[in-house]
Image (cartoon, rainbow, N blue to C red):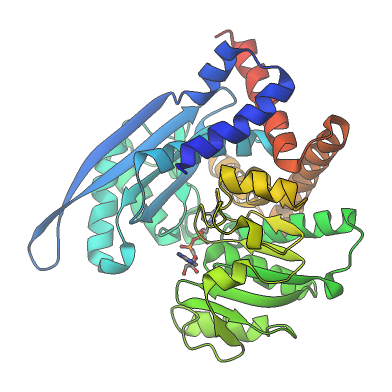
Length: 409
Ligand code: NAD
């Protein structure tokens, strides 16, 4: 199923419960602006290659638009459009004064040298610098990009517009980045998993977890959960999945990936496939890699009783129906992985004030924001007798609708 269809499906369920008018539905599902640009670059061997880049600005009713830039070989307009809408709902659920946007380049970054990657990044900013800005649209990292990519972007943007650190978040700390931004999404996943577990009256030590993806989000989620004594029995990345029924020594796995590039060759567990990981008999499944991994073909194999959507869109709409019938509790992406954008907001605030917060303050504010968001979603779910995703969408849609109405459409 196409990514935007899934967003329409989830939005529709909440809109029905809110009795939202068809005019408002159309308005809220139509992005404000979609950009597709040509990015020609010279490769190291002197040949020319042309890539396609995208930026979709979905909604700015609640503030400047905000969302990551993804470098991945499957990036296309449909995916970016879906992710931009998710950003609108995500910033609304955690109640930070931003709208939603997303972008990316259709490229496999592992095939580029560092110099090629930098040329591609700068050329992309050449193509979109006029439509982004600290008061309009603020990019950030996503899959395939990192703090160094953000430093290149800021530098290229400033060649046109002068000193402007608040135009990009997720920058290195030495470049006006926020302390704790790197860990924020994974840490947020951990905080929210803990909150959900408490509501289920379960204890971390007795709770088994499988995590798909060991990049920025999966790595930091695993670290946090391990420190809280969850029993993480499986982890994975693009090289495969690694399972140990008595629990993986996550400290060893973290050290292993920091020394090498990925988990390939990790000996602290038995190697299984990523598909087998999704079907493990665990309490909590955390997809933290790519979208659409749980679909109609494998949803009925899922045995976990809770799914924490650390990745964006890991469960497609067909799978969602199957999981609901199986009474699996799903903590939706627009809440589960909102820690990153929340600390991005703190970074933007610091940049505007030329003041740097200490890590403790960032972590405390992150926990407070996510806890408030969790409580409002949990309460809505109980009051409206609906699943957590529908409740999260309801909270978000109400906030966006109110802001749009107050401004006078
Ligand atoms: P990343 O590039 O740092 O890591 C991705 C991980 O997934 C890697 O371990 C990679 O090996 C693995 N992977 C890739 N393809 C896979 C496949 N087919 N099967 C199994 N594993 C695979 O990316 P990230 O920043 O950790 O983002 C992961 C997800 O979280 C994405 O969906 C992203 O949109 C979402 N997300 C990220 C952030 C953030 O702050 N980085 C914020 C919100 C949401």
